[in-house]
Length: 239
Image (cartoon, rainbow, N blue to C red; front, side, top):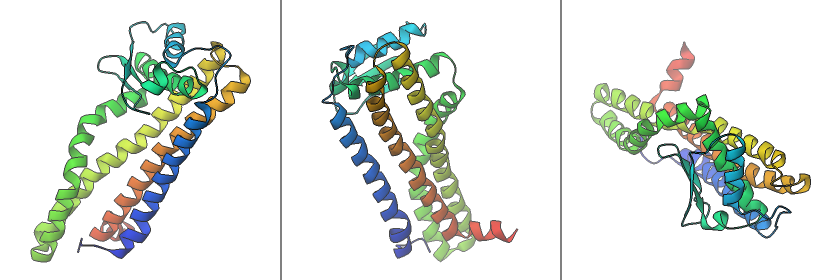
């Protein structure tokens, strides 16, 4: 029942890969474009993030450099903003946009932004469910061919586990959008970028948001496919 399905390849896997690939390409292209453009303030990414946080009264956030490219993130557990090497010391529009976006997450944490709190709560659940969902679904599919009465509950459990990961990807959307909105406003208000430079920074942040949107759409499509194959959708629509 849950073996290879050409419909899954054509309607879920390939479109999902195309969306993710397109979003990733746009991020890299946009970041590279504005990585070559400096700002009038001549701030580094780290300096811009620090100024943004200090203006909002956040002084207990550590900013440090990490290896990698586009590996920037904020760790709420240690209140640490980690900026990749092309961002931490760089003085480009791209570096400032990414750094201020991550600073936006630190502001969310400091101000108790509810969507960030919800996402942080979902992290341990998602870590478990994302690893277990596929094995459980595969076992359920095997059981359906041997003992359907046992296979269906296992399949439903697998779908529920995958659904937890889908919820996480959807909750991530307002978190990322809000962090970028905070960054766009703060960059201008603090004089980190001027009006013309802000357009480039916004392009970088908007492209980055598309990667999260693509991931959410792909995960929703996959969940709907599993619900269709297990017959759950048919049961829901019959009601």
